[in-house]
Length: 147
Image 1 (tube, rainbow, N blue to C red):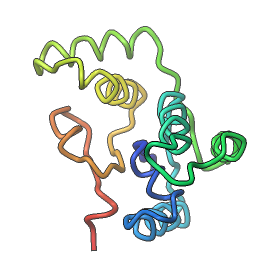
Image 2: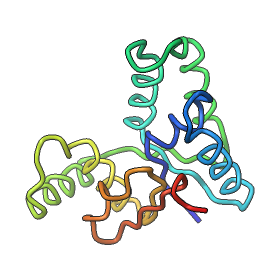
Image 3: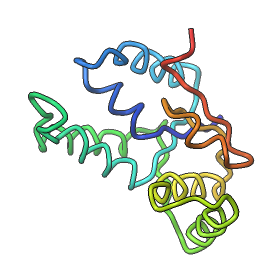
Image 4: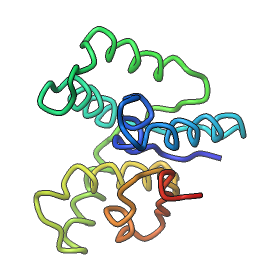
């Protein structure tokens, strides 16, 4: 089974000072323990690095060298798959933006959703399930809201 992971879940799973940390971290560990392959994209990893190293969001922020090490660690795991966004996924994203009349604030999520759907991934672990509920064939799972 393959399940995508949204940036917000990675942030919660790695920033121990956040109230959502324990649930998000435990959820991902349980998924990996059940043999689930976690799916990410380069954009998710880059956004994660951008967020956790931002001193305006976290005091102290994660040092860049540490964030890069964590990102590389994901890429080197056998139970994590990094999907590329190609021209077909980009075209699908443009179609989804138009079909659902989504605005500029939905560009990144729509490209992520389109990449997942293009590669046959139909479940996404996210703390923002409403952001992905509009996309047919993509089922959001909120690890922080689940008991």
